[in-house]
Length: 257
Ligand code: 4HQ
Image (cartoon, rainbow, N blue to C red; front, side, top):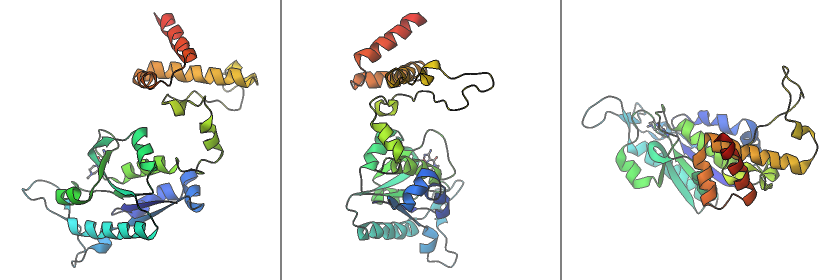
């Protein structure tokens, strides 16, 4: 079972992942576990303070290293007690590598992960230098804390664990599934067959599985070419595009010309 520990001033925020949807069900089924560690609980002074003013002056506060170190020690101990040998301490920060599927896959392969979520102006640099293995960013924008970024990463890693997606996981084995190739997904339709006067693409009603699969692949390719040509280039470089895929793309660009 995958073990997640999170060092955060707001452990209950993670209920958003552990209590709902497929990730909630997966936790119930014990496909992973998640435990939060609040530095406040490890703060020793009368005020239980976990932050202080920045040396050198300036606005805001910085998280002090000691309550974080004690939280992290508790998290590491729990991982060891669960038999986890390879774990990684991930600090969510705009300085980190921008989150993408390759990072998710890399972290999904580990037995455990420890997330460090900063608030205020961030964490004392000495703590980061001593304990953080990896910094990951959700993107080039500023959040109020690392928690939402940690939850995004957590959700993406949890759903890769065997059994989490149930039926949908077998879907991913389908060689026509675009997600597998790093392309955008095809459009999806469900009932009613006509909604506000708009129908469903005819091929999806045909019951012809081969033609449906081909249509979906073509939709993925054409959508990706139009919206994310960088992903097409990457798929091509990785040898993930077939001769038939290339014919589809070539046909589309000659029509556009
Ligand atoms: N922050 N991706 C500053 C982020 C962020 C991001 C988290 C704000 C850390 C101290 N985290 N705190 N972008 O903006 O992950």
